[in-house]
Image (tube, rainbow, N blue to C red; front, side, top):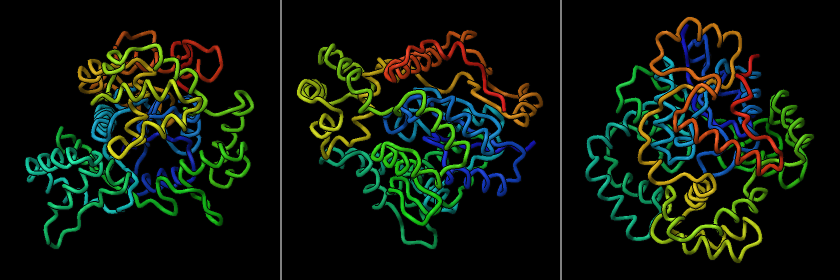
Length: 399
C-alpha cells in the first residue's frame, strides 16, 4: 500500500483541506492518507478551536485514513521543530510521500532553497543573529538574511515570506537532514491565504477566516459553505454541548491566574520566555481584564503575537525550558483514529514501524505523552467542563 502523509492542525477541517487530501491522493496514487495532527495547543501558540477527537472525526469523514497525534512539544514549537516532529513520525509510519500545501505550488523551489541554505549555512545563521540584534523579529531576520543569499540564476527559490512556504521548507530540510526515504511533494493552495478573511462567492476559506467569522457572528450558519457536511455538523454538535469554542479569550481567567501566581524567576523558567519579558507579562496580567488588551500591552516589534502566545501556552501548561531542551525525536505513535482502510494499513505494515503504537494512554509513562495528557486536562478544564482524564478513557475513533 502506498502511504502519503500530511502534517496538519485542521482547526477546523474545511474545504481547502478536503481539496488538499484529494489532490495528495491523486498526485501520489496513494492507497492510504496518514495525518499527523496537533493536539489541544497549536503552532501559533493558541488552544485548538475544538478538541482533537472532534477534529479527528472531521478528518476521517473526509478522506484521511489514519490520524496520529503530534506531541505537544512539537505541536507548539517554532517551524523547524514542528516540522521535525511531523516528518519523523511519518518516517516511523513508513510513509512514501509527504504532501504539504504551499503558496509556491512547486517542489523544485523548495529543493533549490534547501541546497542554497545548506551550502551557505554559516553566513546565513550569522546574518540572522546580527539582524535580530538590530531589533528585527526572528521571522523578519530570517527572510532578510535569506534574500541576501539568493543568487542570480535560472533556478527559482521558495518565497519564505509566506507561512506555508516556511513550513514547507522545514519539511524538506528535515527529510534531507535525517535521510528519510520520504519524498516531499507540494499542492498549490487555492483561493484563500493562510490568514485571509472569508470572501463572498468562494467555497474555500482559511481556517483563520472561519474561526474569526464564527467568533464575530456567534453563529456557525454563515460558514457552512466552506466546510464539508461532517465538519459543519461536528461544529454544530460541539456548540450545542459547550455554547462556545476554545480561545485564549475564553481561557483568559485561567491563564491570568497561571501568570499571577508565579514569580518572575519562575516565569523565566518556562519554554521560549526570554530577555526579561517575564516582568512585562506579569505587569500586563495585573492590569488587563481580557486577553486582547493583555496582548496589545505585551506585543512589540521584537516580540510577535505568535511568539508571545507560545510563551503563554508554555506558562499555562507548565512546560519548561528544561523539558523543551531534553526533547529530541518522537518516541511513540499516538493513534487517535482510523478508517477500515487505515486499520488494514496498520495490520499490514506495523511490524515495520520504528516506534511503538500507543492506542491507550494508560499503557505508557513516556514524558512526552504525559505532557499531552496534562495539556488535555487543562484544555477541558478551561472549557468549563469537568472532563478530566479523557486521554485515558477515549479509545481510537473507528470509522
